Image (cartoon, rainbow, N blue to C red; front, side, top):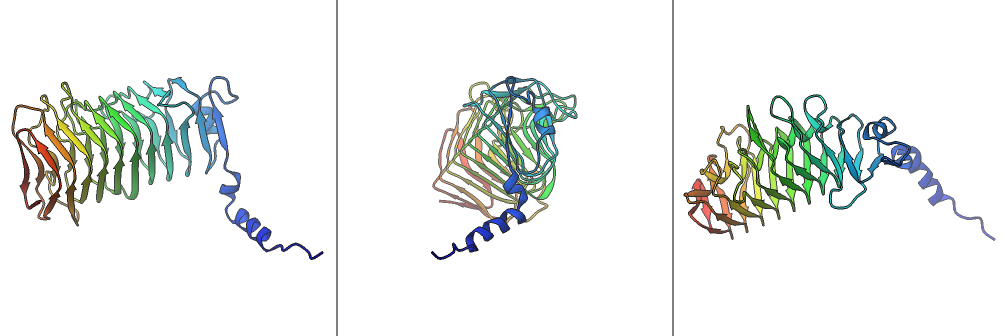
Length: 312
């Protein structure tokens, strides 16, 4: 009998030795019936690459996440793992202070702080992924500090009754100078006073999402890129409500002065309805980059474009 080849086995061992985080990554259960009963206890026992799996239920907790490559996930379905009412550091329910963090299957609600910027998530590191998270009745849903090489990806999430403008404006999502903000398959409803999304990222992509002010929503813009940057808005549905506090437009680019490269503006295959009794623009483009509008369907008192660009 010939000896068994050792090549594949040695290769696997080499990978394990070179990437110890992958080999040692753990799922850490957290909940009232578990050994680790609180999010704080789970984080105290976590290391890079680990996944905290939190039982469904209501937790009056917040956390400052200081571990790279960490996943925090609710075990229950449909957001039944709830973090509420508590803000760490005068900032947020969850502060992501490191890189490559994933937040999944949670409800983050009722974040309030004295300066008016309480957030469900305060992103202070790089490369945050948010999946299937509900942000309900916070001052900000997500608030992100400048991280020029960082990215934030939001998927399959809901933003409901977030926003405030007292003393400063807080939004559904508000990010500083990032490399990329991408929002996919998400829903924004009943935002109060401020914008559903405000982004100072070098590139903003919003796809397959729904924005509805509703009969009581007082939102300002639906999407704003105040300093320019590349903007791609594709396959979304927008309904600007009768109580919107800003009638200027739905998608507004460059209103605070363009201070970064705007490589492209593509607004494609969206549906926009103005449900208010006032005129508005679908897109307001204050940059010198042509906004390319294609395949959009608009209704109500709406003009498609103010500023440079083409409408097809």
